[in-house]
Amino acid sequence: MRARLRPFASGFAVVVALVFILGPLAARPDGRQAPVFPEKDWARIEKPESVGYSSARLQALRAWVQSLDTTAMMVSVGGRSLFEYGELAHLSYLASVRKSILAILYGKYVENGTIALDRTLKDLDFTDVGGLKPEELEATIQDLLTARSGVYHEASNGGDDTASAPPRGSQRHGTYYLYNNWDFNAAGAVFEKLTGREIYDGLQTDLAQPIGMQDFDRSAQKKSGNTERSQYLAYHIWLSTRDMARVGLLMLRGGEWRGTQVAPRDWVRRISSLYTPLNEMNPPYHRALGTGDRWGYGYLWWVWDAPNSPGPFEGAYTGIGAGGQFITVLPELDMVVAHKTDMAQPPAHGPAGRRRTVSRQEYTTILRMLVSARCPGGRCE
Image (cartoon, rainbow, N blue to C red; front, side, top):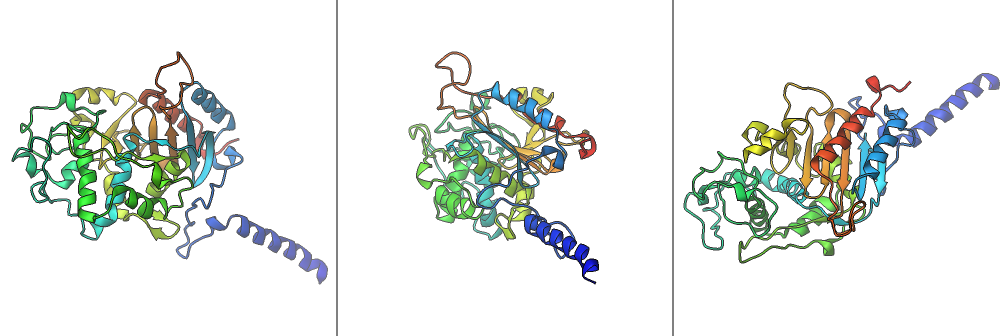
């Protein structure tokens, strides 16, 4: 009898061990596998082939990244870290990825009615240096979040397309897309006005803490801008690469984190869906980027626009910041890519004094190399 029970006992022990090790993958009551999330730190995929990726091709990717000015990069698949490069805990400036993070923060306040997207600037008693035109005051909060306000007032900070803006008052709100920092900074001011909370406090309590950011530092966050140009400052954000990856995973999981709905699921879907297709981008030169870099626009997130080309980029969206800041979500691959270039650091290559930067084209190559690293059918021989 004991001999017959020995294989059973041995097998049971293996099952128990697997349950312990793979606890996050346990089946839910509905029969589906529970999503995996990092705990205090990220779990790592030790053998890429086990999740359908080629180690050799990831090594080729590493060589490409080393040739760039990349400070740090992290790729997660299925909620675990597949690829790591550089100083993942290092805090640095996110540039315009700050806008994508603000979009997430808006979610619960839109859902509970604190922020109504159809409210106008006139409703909110908005003004700015030199005043706003009556037609500009008709712009809504939704227009600000989708870069379609029609307000071409100078922003307090540069780095946008206002040099190509039409004359003030010439475009009706909601009809003309233009990447304009005035819209984005005003959206930050609206958030603070209607919620009664500073953006950075919301960032800490509504995002950093619920998703367990490892490196978040409230004291590192600070606004800047020229108030002689506009009273609305830019709400710049400093995060680590591995915490950026957590933000991407939250989006990938529909706003859920370990059973808690941190951001409303419908809101996550809304902000990451295409609102401005590539052929409506302004100025028109943006449309010419369509060869290999097909990002339209949603609500403060860039959204992949290739409806006739299903594949690994289907449903993808990304935050994009100057110099090489990216949080990219590829739902078809259950993948998040976080990429940082600390522009305050000396350049990795080239002459001294040059600003460290990774271009969108170079980053697109990173994404395509990641896709190519996947074994055919997800099975590595």
